[in-house]
Every structure is written in C-alpha cells, then in structure tokens.
Image (cartoon, rainbow, N blue to C red):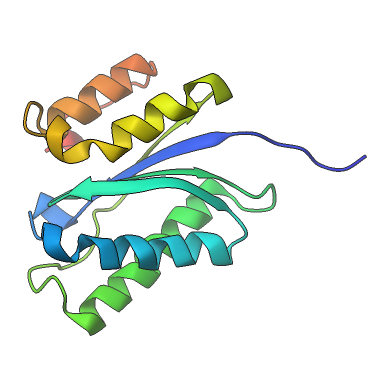
Length: 148
C-alpha cells in the first residue's frame, strides 16, 4: 500500500521583534520566493499572505517532510534571500518559533479566505489578538510573555 495523507497546515510566523518591515508593494516577491521553497520540497501551497510584521501560509506537506524542517527551510532561505535582495531594508530576520494549526478538508476554503483577507482582518485585530484567539481555539497552552 502507498502512503496517503491529507493534512492542511496553517503556519504563522513574524518578523524578528515584530518589526513592521514587510511593505505591501514588495510582499508579492517574498510570497513567490516562499512558494518556490515549498514547491521544491514537494509540498503544495494553497495560500500565502501577510501584513507588515507576519505571514500566514496554508500548505499540505509531502509525507516525508517534517513541519519543523519545512518552516526552518522557509525561514533560513527567505531570510538570506531578503538580506541579499534588500527589498525590506528594516528586515533583520524572522522570530524564533512559529505557530501551526491543522485543519480538515471541509475547512480548507475558510482558511484560504482568512489568509487571503489578512490586510482587512488586521484593520480590526492586532497580531497578538489574532494569535491568542487561534491558540485558544486549538486548545494550545501558551505563555503570555512569548506573545509580545
């Protein structure tokens, strides 16, 4: 029998110290670069978007790829690329860590739309409020000190 999986990962991580440096007019270049990393790992990108201080990714992982390894590869490669390209001069790196949530197939389009509408969403809710709600919705215990 072959290996069959269907797991949607909603991954979120922010810029170091949540510096608002990912300017909207250049973000698409970053998103395309990250899509290339995901694609080269044999994974499928469903949606990527973000705002000035963080990004959201909805992806399906190839069974041989560990989530932590994919996130590390995205953060390391994109950080090097961003520093070389200097498209976000204030970018100093990504935060340590990330948040990741799994969803069922029936929720996929809801999450895609949620990620698609990040700019509008963050007119009403801060990153901290957003991540706190998601952690609570998924029953993940967290320490407030690390949500700064």
